[in-house]
Image (cartoon, rainbow, N blue to C red):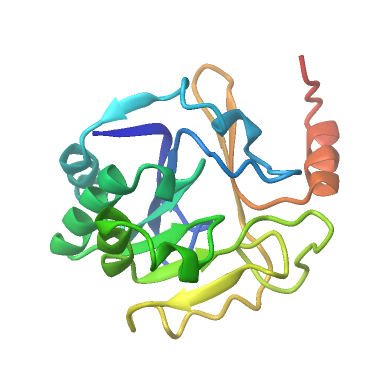
Length: 196
């Protein structure tokens, strides 16, 4: 099983192609200035089987999955099961982590399984004092794109970030992609959003 917070099909803002983004619940790293602090706790979200998630992605017709968080490597067994099942189904796998690849490569068997089933690893903690202004998908200049297979090796992150904005039937506004805190404040003001 895997504890997740959110699934978003048909996004183009979380990697190359049309993807399903899967936000895991829980993060032990807790980067200062993280855009998803509501995902730090392991108490939120819901449990799902990796096989059922892959079935959802295949039905959606997306090219691949992107695992974000939260911290995927805080749930290495469930995320490895998901990544393996995704690759077996012909889906590409991108994983975002606050850990460095070198640390993960010296960890246990589940971390190694997840790395072995990842096409592109985006690694490194978010560092608020080192904002990234020239590469998409990452928030700070220390974060790296590591192509563990050739699947996404031609992807060029030197482009503007994209943002998916979706308004649900109940009026909930969902965002996917990366915004700086200033951009988020500007967007919030322009749509009349106020934090409660």
